[in-house]
Structures are given as structure tokens and as C-alpha cells.
Length: 222
Ligand SMILES: C[S@@+](CC[C@H](N)C(=O)[O-])C[C@H]1O[C@@H](n2cnc3c(N)ncnc32)[C@H](O)[C@@H]1O
Image (spheres, helix red, strand yellow):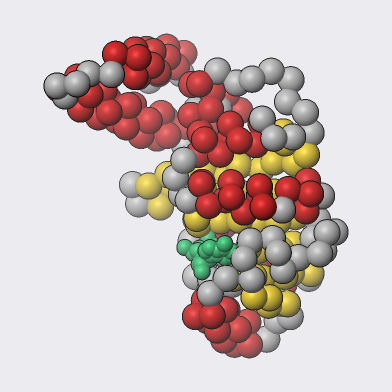
């Protein structure tokens, strides 16, 4: 089933050859194959690969299914675009680090379920530029898509920009992301304020982020 999160990924594919790493059900590769795109779908686990195989067969499309960890099943140049979606940001970072030359050779469509700011920081300090960001909503949850390619970033991003990238300010779902980040930092700040062994540097950092969020709310009339 193509959910809004998966639709966001599909909307941002712009080439004729794609690899989907950690495909599980293979919903995205199947839709891409229907559009005539050459697709490779990989997974590290046997169960998801069998499910992918069943779904591919049911839909009568051609998807090359490969088993293995991260980018290892791919040859350099196999795909113009690589999707890594539905995993934690730390795992996505690990997958890219393990095979960085292959990652440099493609446009990366990354959909981290956590640690988005850390993933942006990793990309910007490891030879990638962030070309575009997108958001999708399912119920009360907002999902990020980070599109990156090899390149040199001009300046290190301010911490708030790693959490709330300026390129998303005009996105219709930006207010939802802003509210989510405000809740997250407020919860952390309140928890730390109540603790016996206060980390004052961390409290100062969170206070700064919350003050940046207030400025962004004013700027966006929220
Ligand atoms: C939660 S599913 C996400 C499925 C799909 N990409 C999506 O966005 O809906 C994560 C999938 O990644 C696979 N996976 C986890 N670690 C992996 C790795 N190192 N290399 C390849 N696949 C991996 C898991 O087996 C699982 O099928």
C-alpha cells in the first residue's frame, strides 16, 4: 500500500534507474517498475525479501531483488538514485559510511525515522550537499525526506537549521514539524531542569533552541 510517506519518496524520484535499500515489502520498487524505471530492491533479511518477491510476482513487474547489507549488493553506477527509507538515521549513516564511494555516485533519497539532525550533520561534513527536503504526514506523525548528493557545503549549518532546515520554511507541513520540535525540546528541557545533577551546558543549548523556535514561530506568523 502506498502511504503518504512512500508517495513522498515516489514523487521525488527523477531518474531512470533506482535502488531501494532495505525494501521490505518492495512497494516503492513495484510502483517505480510500473513507471518503466529500472529498479533494484535489496534487503538484509530473508523474510522481507520473500515478501518483496511475492509482491513483485503478484504485480507482474520486473524488479531485481538482491540480498545483502546496505550498499554491498550494488555495483558502483548500478543506480542513478538510491533510496534508504524507513530506518533510523544512525543506521542510514552507517550504511552510507560503509560504502561512501558508491553513495557519492548516486542521488540519495533518505527517509530517516529518527536522528534527522544528526544525519544532516553527517552528510554536510562528509562530502554531501542537501539538494532538497520534503515532508509527509500520516495521522499525527510527520516524516522527513532528505535528498543529498556529493558536493561541498559552503558553511557549517547552525544547530537549529539541522533540526528545522530553512528550505522547509515554506512547506505546508512546516508548522507541524516546528510544533513537534518544540514539544521535543520542551520535554527535554523540563526533564533536565527537574533532575538533581543538572547539565547546565545542555540546559543552555536547549534554551537556545527553544528561543530560536520562538523566533521561527513569529517569522511564520504562528
Ligand atoms: C522498517 S523496514 C522499511 C521498509 C521500507 N524501506 C519502507 O520505508 O517502508 C526496514 C527494512 O530494512 C531492512 N534492513 C535493516 N538493516 C539493513 C541493512 N543494513 N541493509 C539492508 N537492509 C536492512 C530490514 O530487514 C527491513 O526490511
